[in-house]
Amino acid sequence: MGINVELLRHEPPARPLAKGKRQERPVFTVLEQVIDWDGLLPQLLGRVYNSGRTPTIDRIDPHGYVIFDEAQVRSLLVELPQLAKVAHEESEQQMVRELQRLSTACLATPGLQLCFNGD
Image (cartoon, rainbow, N blue to C red):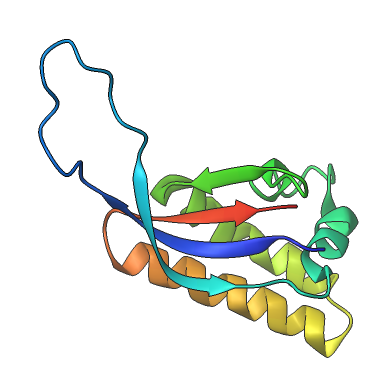
């Protein structure tokens, strides 16, 4: 399996936190999603991993869950051309374009986040 990419909006708590109560888990709404059915993203990441040119991309865990904030998404956009250079197949190039599209959408609206959800 691959790494799904989700554009998220953090939802405020439904009710104010009562004194002495623990904070509830954050709630996110998925606005858009790219599902990596063919496992393209882990293959692409492996081609640039630890190259010294993609420190933000290197944080994406093929088997984990990581959320990028606005600053990390800005860094990701700077590094995506490195990923595009190693995308040889049309399907891989399309994946890079989708990452670019979701990253740009993330920055267009304050408060959105980008989530990479590996399996």
